[in-house]
Image 1 (tube, helix red, strand yellow):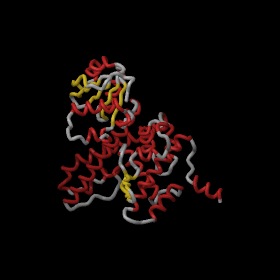
Image 2 (tube, helix red, strand yellow):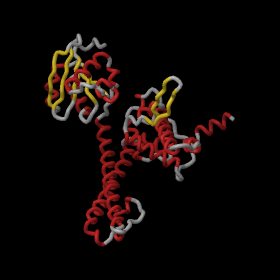
Image 3 (cartoon, one colour):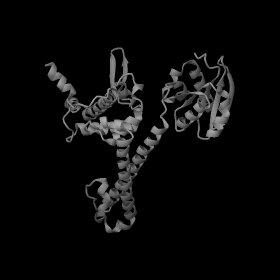
Image 4 (cartoon, helix red, strand yellow):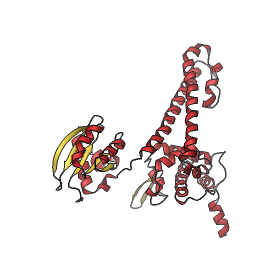
Length: 351
């Protein structure tokens, strides 16, 4: 239980108004209130609580709010509510109750809140570039699929091609649909240009601002986008006690349900950053595919794949993605140069 801070605060955040619960040094609830979810309003309200401990939930506002609260002298804990049954599983859930529960858990033991690490401003701004690219790609994919579907319904068929050259095949569109689909084809062309600009910017960032990414792109199957996203997602490699913990952090560890003699094999946890997990799985799929170069990682994945069974390829992809995440962190921490056949060479030397 905390004794160094006399006041502990819980703040349940909403878009317009956030609810406040304040506990004194004895754990008594001394104040219930609410404050506007705005920068200036928060600063004015909480500057009188300088030195206090405050707990908020992770969410859309937690990043900027945690900075504001820290600026006025509060010790900020950003809680993961999905890990706290008292909050997400309560049968008496309300903003006031959630704020009080946050304060009581923070006062007793902040570890119970499963604190979330907040990103730096420079990391956030660079990640915004990557996410804007994702939105452009998703928009293009939806438009391409819409054109293909409408052309097929009219008795035509768009040719197999890359999305980058899709807009050039207007001759495949039936005449009856030309006027209807022409705006979509024009937007697809513009999206291709914007995505290409984002790709060039990402490569420039890797080269000029984040040269550490080069150690990741040495791995066959890992491109600039994955390397930069990984670096920004992890941010500080020293935050993990071991490289193996990165797989769990990114949600690539299988869930476990063990009791007595029963130990079930379950699917992965899917915790952490979904986009990063998706990129690692794409890399793993390439490594195991026909264009992947021979390496320890590919050989290991193919052995798993050869076992067969239900969902064998998907399991192998997840396993390779997890091992890839661990390998990238290990290279980052040690500064070693990637050797595709490191394990194979060690086995030969031992033999």
